[in-house]
Image 1 (cartoon, rainbow, N blue to C red):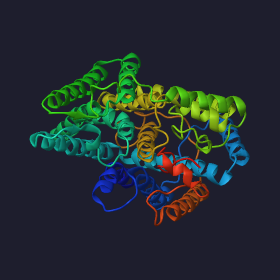
Image 2: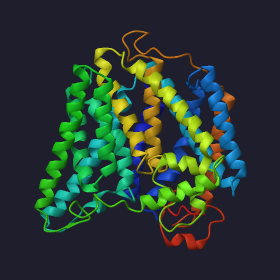
Image 3: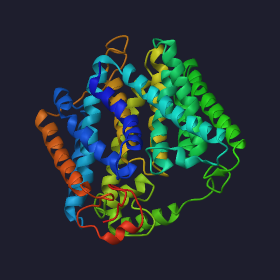
Amino acid sequence: MPYLTCIVAVAIWLIPVLHSVMPGYWSAHDFSRLSQLVLLTAAVPFCLQSASIRYPNQVVDRVGFAAFSMCVMTSVGMSYIPAIAIREVILFAALFTLSCAMAREMARVGCERPLQIMALGTLIYGLHVVGMAIVVLANGQPIAGWELLTGFDNPRFLNHAQTIAIPLAAAVSLQPNTRRLMRTIALGATFLSGALLFICQGRATIVAIAVGICVVIALFRGTAVRRYAVALSVPLLLGGLSMALLFQFAPETVGGVGSDGFTKVHSRDFLILRAMDIAIDSPWFGVGPMHYAHAYNGKASHPHNFYIQLLAEVGIPATLISAVLVARWMRRCYRTLRRVSGDLQPLAAGVWTAFTAVLVDGLFSGNFVMPISQLWIAVLLGIIMGMLGGGANSESDHSFPSPRLAIARRPVVLLVFAATGWLALQAFSEAAGVDAPTLHGASEAFKTYIAPRFWSHGWF
């Protein structure tokens, strides 16, 4: 059983719920950040047991990764506050190491149980929100849609998680070796996710999943893929229509569909132009990781476009190198996933839909910035790398052919998680005894407006 992956699968839904039921004064974002760091640090024993980090062993990729690392570390060294810039590097290194450890587990024993846990969590959270909406409606009170989404400061943070949770739940609903009850749970999770998307006005997530479905239909041909597209889109649509009907019976809707929320750009044009100006001024190495949040702009501490954020923070060369590395890895993934056995085709379609949706969502949002969505992305990468590595969920040793893989030794894992432990200590020292933690040295003036980055008050 993949214990580490199951623990993370439980945590990604448990953390938001815990914030809503536990007494405390931190915002949901800050609570999630602290919980994320605790989880990453606690994962050390599992990562040491699975210290074989899987990544392509080709010379081009090794050289590219080394060049990317040099660019990023140069960016850190040249940043205004290197001690803050290194935080983001440590965080992403820890998340990647966690993904590799989960991949090692799932390559051996499969990913069915973690997927089922995530689908169950998606269902429970959906029942929680929809149940509250029904109770409010029964009492004749106005429905404040966004206020129903407990455990998330902003409904977009939930949407980032849904971008991955929905395609994976749909895949579970089609797994032939899964019990009927579990398939029904996954189907219900997809249905309720559609209802939550209606409440949230989750434009980016809707567009991202729609693009993911279209890409999968175009690239993965076959009856199983068409069945997956139906299993994903039909319950999702019905869930949204059902919630729309429920809202019609409400005496008043506050923050729900019907406003101009679908057409607003919410200052994204301003934020992206600001990031482009930074990239033009510092084209080679950017201003440093997390340093978009260094210059107060009154709107947001990240540009709501991950790719433009990379250009501004680590520079054009590092961004281009990372794009080439990801494109090469995706090509290998596609060549592998399209050759899976029939029973595993829905899962292959699901992970490819989710990964495509993550990339599309990154054009409009901060899914690579927020702690819960970062954990979801880490789990998704672990599942994909686990499938590439083979394992008990394949019919033979060649059901998931993979390229040659290099090995990262235990000292590297220890170094990453020693740094993660240091980061966790720094974070808890900043959060101790205050309801609105900020990075060391941040001005009190920055607490006048919430702009989440590392903390809810993200500027420094």
